[in-house]
Image (cartoon, rainbow, N blue to C red):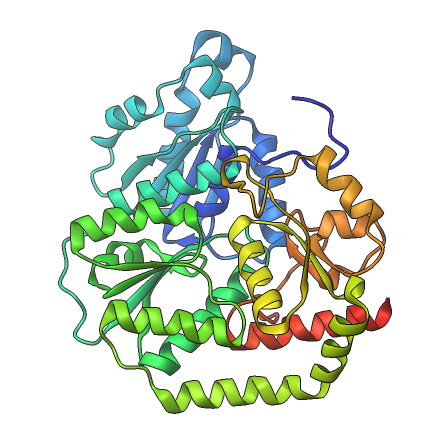
Length: 409
Protein backbone atom coordinates (compact mmCIF):
# COMPACT_ATOMS: atom_id res chain seq x y z
CA UNK A 1 0.00 0.00 0.00
CA UNK A 2 1.40 3.41 -0.98
CA UNK A 3 1.57 6.54 1.11
CA UNK A 4 -1.62 8.60 1.39
CA UNK A 5 -2.23 12.01 2.86
CA UNK A 6 -5.91 11.14 3.20
CA UNK A 7 -7.77 7.88 3.78
CA UNK A 8 -7.04 5.36 1.00
CA UNK A 9 -9.78 3.56 -0.89
CA UNK A 10 -11.58 1.30 1.60
CA UNK A 11 -11.19 -2.42 1.05
CA UNK A 12 -13.83 -4.90 0.00
CA UNK A 13 -13.98 -6.04 3.62
CA UNK A 14 -15.06 -2.54 4.66
CA UNK A 15 -17.73 -2.45 1.97
CA UNK A 16 -19.07 -5.78 3.20
CA UNK A 17 -19.01 -4.66 6.82
CA UNK A 18 -20.81 -1.38 6.10
CA UNK A 19 -23.44 -3.32 4.16
CA UNK A 20 -24.09 -5.90 6.88
CA UNK A 21 -23.70 -3.81 10.02
CA UNK A 22 -27.17 -2.23 9.85
CA UNK A 23 -29.15 -5.50 9.62
CA UNK A 24 -31.23 -6.29 12.71
CA UNK A 25 -31.55 -9.82 14.03
CA UNK A 26 -28.09 -10.90 12.94
CA UNK A 27 -24.59 -11.09 14.33
CA UNK A 28 -21.31 -10.60 12.50
CA UNK A 29 -18.14 -12.42 13.47
CA UNK A 30 -14.90 -11.29 11.94
CA UNK A 31 -12.12 -13.85 11.82
CA UNK A 32 -9.27 -11.43 12.26
CA UNK A 33 -7.52 -8.93 14.47
CA UNK A 34 -9.46 -7.36 17.32
CA UNK A 35 -8.41 -3.84 16.38
CA UNK A 36 -10.19 -4.05 13.02
CA UNK A 37 -13.61 -4.37 14.59
CA UNK A 38 -12.97 -1.84 17.35
CA UNK A 39 -12.08 0.86 14.84
CA UNK A 40 -14.92 -0.16 12.52
CA UNK A 41 -17.41 0.01 15.37
CA UNK A 42 -16.42 3.59 16.12
CA UNK A 43 -16.75 4.53 12.44
CA UNK A 44 -20.25 3.03 12.30
CA UNK A 45 -21.33 4.91 15.43
CA UNK A 46 -20.10 8.12 13.82
CA UNK A 47 -22.50 7.35 10.95
CA UNK A 48 -25.48 6.80 13.32
CA UNK A 49 -25.44 3.00 13.10
CA UNK A 50 -26.36 1.95 16.63
CA UNK A 51 -28.90 -0.86 16.78
CA UNK A 52 -28.15 -3.08 13.83
CA UNK A 53 -26.04 -6.19 13.55
CA UNK A 54 -24.10 -7.29 16.65
CA UNK A 55 -20.38 -7.10 15.86
CA UNK A 56 -17.73 -9.51 17.17
CA UNK A 57 -14.09 -10.29 16.44
CA UNK A 58 -12.25 -13.54 17.20
CA UNK A 59 -8.83 -11.92 17.62
CA UNK A 60 -5.97 -13.95 16.18
CA UNK A 61 -2.32 -14.11 17.20
CA UNK A 62 0.94 -15.34 15.70
CA UNK A 63 0.23 -18.96 16.61
CA UNK A 64 -3.12 -18.95 14.86
CA UNK A 65 -1.51 -17.53 11.74
CA UNK A 66 1.50 -19.86 11.73
CA UNK A 67 -0.46 -23.04 12.41
CA UNK A 68 -3.67 -22.14 10.61
CA UNK A 69 -5.59 -22.67 13.86
CA UNK A 70 -9.30 -21.74 13.69
CA UNK A 71 -10.27 -22.78 17.23
CA UNK A 72 -10.96 -19.17 18.20
CA UNK A 73 -13.58 -18.93 15.48
CA UNK A 74 -15.37 -22.04 16.76
CA UNK A 75 -15.40 -20.72 20.32
CA UNK A 76 -16.61 -17.27 19.24
CA UNK A 77 -19.52 -18.66 17.27
CA UNK A 78 -20.51 -20.85 20.22
CA UNK A 79 -20.48 -17.87 22.56
CA UNK A 80 -22.46 -15.69 20.15
CA UNK A 81 -25.14 -18.35 19.77
CA UNK A 82 -25.32 -18.85 23.54
CA UNK A 83 -25.54 -15.15 24.39
CA UNK A 84 -27.63 -13.72 21.54
CA UNK A 85 -29.14 -16.63 19.61
CA UNK A 86 -29.30 -14.67 16.31
CA UNK A 87 -31.13 -16.02 13.27
CA UNK A 88 -28.05 -15.53 11.10
CA UNK A 89 -24.35 -15.15 11.81
CA UNK A 90 -22.35 -13.44 9.08
CA UNK A 91 -18.74 -14.61 8.89
CA UNK A 92 -16.29 -12.02 7.63
CA UNK A 93 -12.60 -12.64 6.88
CA UNK A 94 -9.98 -9.99 7.49
CA UNK A 95 -6.88 -9.52 5.38
CA UNK A 96 -4.61 -12.01 7.19
CA UNK A 97 -6.87 -15.11 6.95
CA UNK A 98 -7.63 -14.13 3.36
CA UNK A 99 -3.95 -13.90 2.46
CA UNK A 100 -2.97 -17.19 4.13
CA UNK A 101 -5.90 -18.96 2.48
CA UNK A 102 -8.28 -19.81 5.32
CA UNK A 103 -11.31 -21.53 3.77
CA UNK A 104 -14.14 -19.78 5.60
CA UNK A 105 -16.98 -21.41 3.57
CA UNK A 106 -15.60 -24.87 4.36
CA UNK A 107 -15.38 -24.01 8.06
CA UNK A 108 -18.99 -22.85 8.00
CA UNK A 109 -20.13 -26.08 6.38
CA UNK A 110 -18.40 -28.07 9.10
CA UNK A 111 -19.86 -25.97 11.91
CA UNK A 112 -23.37 -25.60 10.51
CA UNK A 113 -24.47 -29.05 11.70
CA UNK A 114 -23.78 -27.97 15.29
CA UNK A 115 -26.18 -25.02 14.98
CA UNK A 116 -29.33 -26.17 13.17
CA UNK A 117 -31.33 -23.12 14.25
CA UNK A 118 -28.74 -20.51 13.24
CA UNK A 119 -27.69 -19.82 9.66
CA UNK A 120 -23.93 -19.41 9.19
CA UNK A 121 -23.30 -17.25 6.15
CA UNK A 122 -19.67 -16.68 5.06
CA UNK A 123 -18.59 -13.65 3.04
CA UNK A 124 -15.42 -13.09 1.08
CA UNK A 125 -13.37 -10.14 -0.18
CA UNK A 126 -11.28 -9.67 2.93
CA UNK A 127 -8.06 -9.05 1.01
CA UNK A 128 -6.51 -5.84 -0.27
CA UNK A 129 -7.10 -6.61 -3.95
CA UNK A 130 -10.81 -5.67 -3.86
CA UNK A 131 -12.13 -2.21 -3.03
CA UNK A 132 -15.24 -1.13 -1.15
CA UNK A 133 -17.70 -0.94 -4.03
CA UNK A 134 -17.12 -4.56 -5.02
CA UNK A 135 -17.56 -5.60 -1.41
CA UNK A 136 -20.92 -3.81 -1.28
CA UNK A 137 -22.02 -5.43 -4.54
CA UNK A 138 -21.09 -8.96 -3.49
CA UNK A 139 -22.60 -8.57 -0.03
CA UNK A 140 -25.94 -7.40 -1.43
CA UNK A 141 -25.94 -10.24 -3.95
CA UNK A 142 -25.12 -12.93 -1.39
CA UNK A 143 -27.84 -11.64 0.95
CA UNK A 144 -30.57 -11.96 -1.69
CA UNK A 145 -29.27 -15.33 -2.83
CA UNK A 146 -29.17 -16.81 0.67
CA UNK A 147 -31.95 -15.30 2.77
CA UNK A 148 -35.22 -14.67 0.83
CA UNK A 149 -37.81 -17.41 1.19
CA UNK A 150 -40.45 -18.57 -1.29
CA UNK A 151 -43.37 -16.24 -0.69
CA UNK A 152 -46.46 -14.79 -2.37
CA UNK A 153 -46.70 -11.14 -3.38
CA UNK A 154 -48.29 -8.86 -0.79
CA UNK A 155 -52.01 -8.13 -1.36
CA UNK A 156 -51.25 -4.41 -1.71
CA UNK A 157 -48.32 -3.21 -3.86
CA UNK A 158 -45.04 -2.92 -1.96
CA UNK A 159 -41.41 -2.21 -2.79
CA UNK A 160 -37.84 -2.85 -1.68
CA UNK A 161 -34.98 -0.37 -1.68
CA UNK A 162 -31.66 -1.96 -2.59
CA UNK A 163 -28.36 -0.20 -1.94
CA UNK A 164 -28.99 2.07 1.03
CA UNK A 165 -25.77 1.26 2.88
CA UNK A 166 -23.75 2.97 5.58
CA UNK A 167 -20.85 3.86 3.27
CA UNK A 168 -22.95 6.53 1.53
CA UNK A 169 -23.15 9.94 3.17
CA UNK A 170 -26.60 10.73 4.58
CA UNK A 171 -27.85 7.29 3.49
CA UNK A 172 -30.66 7.11 6.06
CA UNK A 173 -32.13 10.50 5.18
CA UNK A 174 -32.15 9.71 1.44
CA UNK A 175 -33.86 6.36 2.02
CA UNK A 176 -36.48 7.99 4.25
CA UNK A 177 -37.33 10.53 1.54
CA UNK A 178 -37.77 7.75 -1.04
CA UNK A 179 -40.06 5.87 1.36
CA UNK A 180 -42.07 9.07 1.92
CA UNK A 181 -42.61 9.89 -1.74
CA UNK A 182 -43.39 6.28 -2.66
CA UNK A 183 -46.09 6.12 -0.01
CA UNK A 184 -47.47 9.52 -1.00
CA UNK A 185 -47.43 8.85 -4.75
CA UNK A 186 -48.50 5.21 -4.85
CA UNK A 187 -49.65 4.32 -1.34
CA UNK A 188 -46.85 1.72 -1.28
CA UNK A 189 -44.96 0.62 1.81
CA UNK A 190 -41.48 -0.84 1.97
CA UNK A 191 -40.86 -4.51 2.67
CA UNK A 192 -37.10 -4.05 3.10
CA UNK A 193 -34.86 -0.99 2.93
CA UNK A 194 -31.70 -2.93 2.26
CA UNK A 195 -29.67 -2.51 4.28
CA UNK A 196 -30.04 0.74 6.25
CA UNK A 197 -33.44 -0.06 7.77
CA UNK A 198 -34.00 -3.79 7.54
CA UNK A 199 -33.85 -7.05 9.46
CA UNK A 200 -33.20 -10.68 8.63
CA UNK A 201 -36.99 -11.18 8.57
CA UNK A 202 -37.45 -8.28 6.14
CA UNK A 203 -34.84 -9.66 3.76
CA UNK A 204 -36.48 -13.08 3.93
CA UNK A 205 -39.72 -11.45 2.69
CA UNK A 206 -38.16 -9.44 -0.16
CA UNK A 207 -39.75 -11.70 -2.77
CA UNK A 208 -43.19 -10.43 -1.72
CA UNK A 209 -42.52 -6.91 -3.08
CA UNK A 210 -43.87 -5.74 -6.43
CA UNK A 211 -40.88 -3.61 -7.48
CA UNK A 212 -37.26 -3.15 -6.43
CA UNK A 213 -35.78 0.35 -6.34
CA UNK A 214 -32.03 0.07 -6.89
CA UNK A 215 -30.44 3.33 -5.76
CA UNK A 216 -26.81 2.48 -6.57
CA UNK A 217 -25.35 0.42 -9.35
CA UNK A 218 -23.74 -2.05 -6.92
CA UNK A 219 -27.26 -3.31 -6.17
CA UNK A 220 -28.20 -4.18 -9.74
CA UNK A 221 -26.82 -7.73 -9.58
CA UNK A 222 -28.99 -8.38 -6.52
CA UNK A 223 -32.03 -6.94 -8.29
CA UNK A 224 -31.42 -9.11 -11.34
CA UNK A 225 -31.29 -12.19 -9.13
CA UNK A 226 -34.59 -11.24 -7.46
CA UNK A 227 -36.14 -10.57 -10.87
CA UNK A 228 -35.09 -14.01 -12.08
CA UNK A 229 -36.32 -15.81 -8.97
CA UNK A 230 -39.48 -13.87 -8.10
CA UNK A 231 -40.28 -12.02 -11.32
CA UNK A 232 -39.87 -8.67 -9.56
CA UNK A 233 -39.02 -5.80 -11.94
CA UNK A 234 -36.55 -3.16 -10.85
CA UNK A 235 -35.64 0.47 -11.49
CA UNK A 236 -32.01 1.60 -11.30
CA UNK A 237 -31.49 5.25 -10.43
CA UNK A 238 -31.70 7.94 -7.75
CA UNK A 239 -34.34 10.71 -7.82
CA UNK A 240 -32.74 14.18 -7.78
CA UNK A 241 -34.39 17.54 -8.34
CA UNK A 242 -38.05 18.45 -8.70
CA UNK A 243 -38.61 17.42 -12.31
CA UNK A 244 -36.03 14.65 -11.95
CA UNK A 245 -38.01 13.15 -9.08
CA UNK A 246 -41.24 13.33 -11.07
CA UNK A 247 -39.54 11.61 -14.02
CA UNK A 248 -38.28 8.92 -11.65
CA UNK A 249 -41.79 8.41 -10.25
CA UNK A 250 -43.18 8.15 -13.77
CA UNK A 251 -40.70 5.33 -14.46
CA UNK A 252 -41.85 3.59 -11.28
CA UNK A 253 -45.45 3.91 -12.48
CA UNK A 254 -44.57 2.54 -15.90
CA UNK A 255 -42.70 -0.47 -14.49
CA UNK A 256 -45.20 -1.27 -11.74
CA UNK A 257 -48.39 -0.51 -13.68
CA UNK A 258 -49.64 1.70 -10.84
CA UNK A 259 -51.27 5.11 -11.17
CA UNK A 260 -49.58 8.08 -9.59
CA UNK A 261 -51.51 10.19 -7.10
CA UNK A 262 -51.50 13.36 -9.18
CA UNK A 263 -52.73 15.50 -6.27
CA UNK A 264 -49.77 14.46 -4.09
CA UNK A 265 -47.24 15.03 -6.87
CA UNK A 266 -48.78 18.38 -7.76
CA UNK A 267 -48.65 19.50 -4.16
CA UNK A 268 -45.05 18.38 -3.70
CA UNK A 269 -43.99 20.14 -6.89
CA UNK A 270 -45.85 23.29 -5.87
CA UNK A 271 -44.43 23.38 -2.35
CA UNK A 272 -40.88 22.78 -3.61
CA UNK A 273 -41.12 25.46 -6.29
CA UNK A 274 -42.66 27.98 -3.91
CA UNK A 275 -39.74 27.56 -1.54
CA UNK A 276 -37.27 28.19 -4.37
CA UNK A 277 -39.04 31.30 -5.75
CA UNK A 278 -37.21 33.80 -3.46
CA UNK A 279 -33.75 32.70 -4.67
CA UNK A 280 -34.38 31.93 -8.35
CA UNK A 281 -33.68 35.53 -9.54
CA UNK A 282 -30.33 35.44 -7.73
CA UNK A 283 -29.45 32.06 -9.27
CA UNK A 284 -30.38 33.24 -12.77
CA UNK A 285 -28.29 36.37 -12.29
CA UNK A 286 -25.38 34.24 -11.12
CA UNK A 287 -25.56 32.02 -14.20
CA UNK A 288 -25.95 34.93 -16.59
CA UNK A 289 -23.51 37.47 -15.15
CA UNK A 290 -21.05 35.45 -13.09
CA UNK A 291 -20.77 32.01 -14.72
CA UNK A 292 -17.57 31.16 -12.87
CA UNK A 293 -19.52 31.35 -9.60
CA UNK A 294 -22.31 29.18 -11.02
CA UNK A 295 -19.92 26.31 -11.77
CA UNK A 296 -20.77 23.07 -9.97
CA UNK A 297 -17.89 20.71 -9.08
CA UNK A 298 -18.63 17.37 -7.43
CA UNK A 299 -16.66 14.41 -6.07
CA UNK A 300 -18.06 11.22 -4.58
CA UNK A 301 -20.00 8.10 -5.50
CA UNK A 302 -20.63 8.06 -9.26
CA UNK A 303 -24.42 7.76 -8.94
CA UNK A 304 -24.62 10.60 -6.42
CA UNK A 305 -22.41 12.87 -8.52
CA UNK A 306 -24.39 12.07 -11.67
CA UNK A 307 -27.74 12.75 -9.99
CA UNK A 308 -26.83 16.03 -8.33
CA UNK A 309 -25.08 17.24 -11.48
CA UNK A 310 -28.13 16.51 -13.65
CA UNK A 311 -30.36 18.50 -11.27
CA UNK A 312 -27.99 21.47 -11.22
CA UNK A 313 -27.46 21.58 -14.98
CA UNK A 314 -30.87 20.59 -16.32
CA UNK A 315 -33.19 22.33 -13.88
CA UNK A 316 -31.12 25.31 -12.72
CA UNK A 317 -28.77 25.88 -15.70
CA UNK A 318 -25.67 25.69 -13.53
CA UNK A 319 -22.38 25.06 -15.33
CA UNK A 320 -20.46 21.81 -15.04
CA UNK A 321 -17.13 22.13 -13.29
CA UNK A 322 -14.67 19.38 -12.41
CA UNK A 323 -16.50 16.19 -11.46
CA UNK A 324 -15.07 12.87 -10.40
CA UNK A 325 -16.04 9.59 -8.76
CA UNK A 326 -14.38 7.49 -6.07
CA UNK A 327 -14.32 4.07 -7.77
CA UNK A 328 -11.99 3.02 -10.60
CA UNK A 329 -14.67 0.63 -11.90
CA UNK A 330 -17.26 3.40 -12.20
CA UNK A 331 -15.23 6.04 -14.01
CA UNK A 332 -16.52 7.35 -17.35
CA UNK A 333 -15.79 10.13 -19.79
CA UNK A 334 -18.35 12.38 -18.07
CA UNK A 335 -17.40 11.47 -14.50
CA UNK A 336 -13.87 10.01 -14.40
CA UNK A 337 -12.27 8.32 -11.43
CA UNK A 338 -9.70 10.52 -9.66
CA UNK A 339 -6.92 9.24 -7.45
CA UNK A 340 -5.88 11.27 -4.41
CA UNK A 341 -3.11 12.87 -6.48
CA UNK A 342 -5.72 14.01 -9.00
CA UNK A 343 -8.55 15.28 -6.81
CA UNK A 344 -6.40 16.92 -4.11
CA UNK A 345 -5.11 19.73 -6.41
CA UNK A 346 -8.66 20.33 -7.69
CA UNK A 347 -9.97 20.82 -4.17
CA UNK A 348 -6.96 22.81 -2.97
CA UNK A 349 -6.97 25.19 -5.93
CA UNK A 350 -10.74 25.66 -6.11
CA UNK A 351 -11.46 29.39 -5.90
CA UNK A 352 -14.83 30.20 -7.46
CA UNK A 353 -18.02 28.27 -7.84
CA UNK A 354 -19.72 25.47 -5.91
CA UNK A 355 -17.69 22.52 -4.63
CA UNK A 356 -19.29 19.45 -3.06
CA UNK A 357 -17.19 16.47 -2.02
CA UNK A 358 -16.09 14.52 1.06
CA UNK A 359 -16.04 15.95 4.55
CA UNK A 360 -12.35 15.12 4.81
CA UNK A 361 -11.45 17.16 1.72
CA UNK A 362 -13.64 20.10 2.70
CA UNK A 363 -12.17 20.27 6.19
CA UNK A 364 -8.62 20.09 4.78
CA UNK A 365 -9.23 23.21 2.70
CA UNK A 366 -11.15 25.06 5.41
CA UNK A 367 -14.52 24.89 3.65
CA UNK A 368 -17.91 24.38 5.21
CA UNK A 369 -18.96 20.78 5.80
CA UNK A 370 -22.47 21.82 4.74
CA UNK A 371 -21.33 21.08 1.18
CA UNK A 372 -20.42 17.47 1.97
CA UNK A 373 -21.97 14.79 -0.25
CA UNK A 374 -19.61 11.86 0.32
CA UNK A 375 -17.40 10.11 2.82
CA UNK A 376 -14.85 10.05 4.46
CA UNK A 377 -16.66 12.08 7.10
CA UNK A 378 -15.03 13.94 9.97
CA UNK A 379 -18.03 14.52 12.23
CA UNK A 380 -20.47 12.58 14.35
CA UNK A 381 -23.90 11.91 12.80
CA UNK A 382 -25.91 10.88 15.83
CA UNK A 383 -29.33 10.85 14.18
CA UNK A 384 -30.78 9.97 10.75
CA UNK A 385 -33.05 13.01 10.51
CA UNK A 386 -30.90 15.44 8.53
CA UNK A 387 -32.24 16.82 5.23
CA UNK A 388 -31.90 14.44 2.27
CA UNK A 389 -30.32 15.10 -1.11
CA UNK A 390 -32.85 13.07 -3.11
CA UNK A 391 -36.51 13.69 -3.80
CA UNK A 392 -38.51 16.89 -3.52
CA UNK A 393 -37.11 17.83 -0.14
CA UNK A 394 -33.60 17.05 -1.34
CA UNK A 395 -34.03 19.51 -4.23
CA UNK A 396 -34.91 22.33 -1.84
CA UNK A 397 -32.03 21.37 0.44
CA UNK A 398 -29.47 21.46 -2.39
CA UNK A 399 -30.62 24.84 -3.67
CA UNK A 400 -30.51 26.18 -0.13
CA UNK A 401 -26.89 25.03 0.15
CA UNK A 402 -25.93 26.46 -3.22
CA UNK A 403 -27.44 29.91 -2.76
CA UNK A 404 -25.80 30.31 0.66
CA UNK A 405 -22.44 29.11 -0.66
CA UNK A 406 -22.62 31.57 -3.57
CA UNK A 407 -23.38 34.44 -1.20
CA UNK A 408 -20.36 33.52 0.93
CA UNK A 409 -18.10 33.71 -2.12
